[in-house]
Structure formats: C-alpha cells, structure tokens
Amino acid sequence: MVIKVLVFKRRNSSSHEVIKRAAARLGLSRHNLLRYLPESSGFVDVGFNRIEPGAKTLLLLHGTFSSTAGTFGDLYEKADFLSSLMAAGHFEQILALDHDTIFVSPEENVSRFDEILCDQQLQKPVRSIGFSRGALVLKQMTMSSHTVNIEHGVTVAGANHVGYFSALRGLKWLLTAMRHLSPPGPTRTFLSTLAQHSDKALDRLEGLRAMDGGSEINQRILQYEDPNSSTTLIPITGAFHPELVTPGWRRITRRSLNAAICVLLATRQHDWVVAVQEQGRAEPLRPMRPPDGLDQPIRGLHTRMVGDQLDNAYLKKALLSEPCSCG
Image (tube, rainbow, N blue to C red; front, side, top):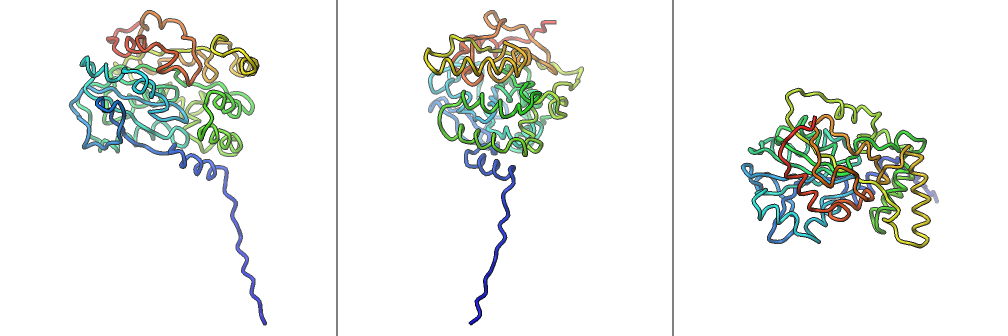
C-alpha cells in the first residue's frame, strides 16, 4: 500500500495584511458619502443622485480611527446642533464623508470624494468642519477637489503634525494615548492590533503618515502655496487639564501618562494627541481671528471635544463667521 502525503506551505500574513483585515472588520477602509436627515436626526449613505448640487452645504470630516457618528454624533444624537443650523437657514444640506484615515493619503481621500460626486461640482461655496486628521483632508480639498469650493473652514484639534512621530517608537505611544481615550470595544482592540504591527507597517500607512510633519505627504499640504486662494480658517485648539479626570486610580494613571506625553511632545500644552501649537496652524489657508471664548485653548482631551467639552455655541460662532483676515 502506498500512502501519499500532501504538504501545503502556509504563507504567514504580513503586518500590513493583518492591519487591513482588522480595519475592514470595523469599516475603517471605506469611502461613503452621507447626508443628514433632520426628520430622523441622523445620517444616511447616499450617492451623487441623492444630494442637491445647488444647496448651501456644510461638510463634516471626521478624525482618525473614527467615523462621522464617532466624531460628530453628539452634535445630533445628544443635541439639535445640526438641525438648528438647517432650521435657521444657515445650510440647506449637511454632508459628511466617511473615509479611510489609515491606509490612504488625504489627497486620495479627496479623489475618492470627487469620484462619489461623479466630478460634478457643488454650485455654491461650502463650509466645512474638520476634526483631527479631518483638518488635513479639509485643507487638501481646497487644493485638489474638482467638486467643492470651500469658502470657510473650522478645524478642531487639527492633526497638522502629531509629535509622536518624531519620537522613538512614537506611534506606539500615540496608540497608547488613543486607547486610553477610547471606550472599551472594537476600536480599542484594533488599536492594540495596530500597535503590535506598527513598526513593520508604518511606511505603508499613508493615512497615518499624513500627520507626521516630516513626511512628504504632510509637507505637500501645509507648504502648499496658492496666492489666489481666499479660503479662510478658524483653528480651535484644546489642552489637557487635571480637572478633566475624576479622583481615584484612573486619575493617578492619567497624570502619569500625561507627564510622559509632555516629554514626548516637548510641551505641556497638548490634548494628549496633538500639541496646541500644531492644532492652531491655519496654513496653507487664510487664518481668521477666532470668536471671543476661543482665543485660548479649551479644556479638552482629543476625542472628547466635539459635542462635549467644546461649547456648541462657540463652534457655531466659528462656523458662521464671515471672512475677515486677521493679518
């Protein structure tokens, strides 16, 4: 009797493949256009044929490892901020782009956005809010989008440069901070997976490298020059304060982590992710003087600002400010 044994060689997954599979399970590598429906107080996934090209539009751009609901949910789930903007006639439609913040650059994010709109231009100037990495996407849109003309933007905790990338094993420190800022659940699990493979995969994660001030991706945005640009921007900044944590062991843990972050970012003024100085950068757009109440950093942790530690009244003032150069 002859017995034949078949041997199959197993190919181990690369770090990049492991991260992509984990991100796909959470929907972090998608590009979807959403439209806000005030009657249901929520967003729905739409295509170009379900938006109004001639409407006055607000565009929301979420932060890293997040989504429109994750970043802006408190503005319509716990408050009537978005519906009140529409009821008062400030905007006729509110759109949002759920987009990949990990694997592709802001330029690619904008290209995908234009594809969704079938390269058909929105007819009226647009206003936009960009949170964290969304600030870079907002700025990129003013540079390369064929479909939107952003007249005014507001950035909150803009990730113009995340100083962790300048430190040894800095990305792991960034992910540690983000895990402390994230509630228990799938996102925290993903951040742990990313931390395990970050050293081998970072060069291919263009979405994250965009937040590194030393990368070409970042420099192409912040060093862009367009003398004809008229887009104005109000950066809103936030900084950690000990009052933001409750007494007990978590307070001790967070104070210890905060001390380490101060060393890594070389400043005591930060929101655990981005230094205040970097959050406040408007370039390459025209800076506007912030409304009263926003001329100093608000007390906030990076992921808790929009709809929570940032007063919605101040956000509204910044969003509706009329173009007026401060310099």
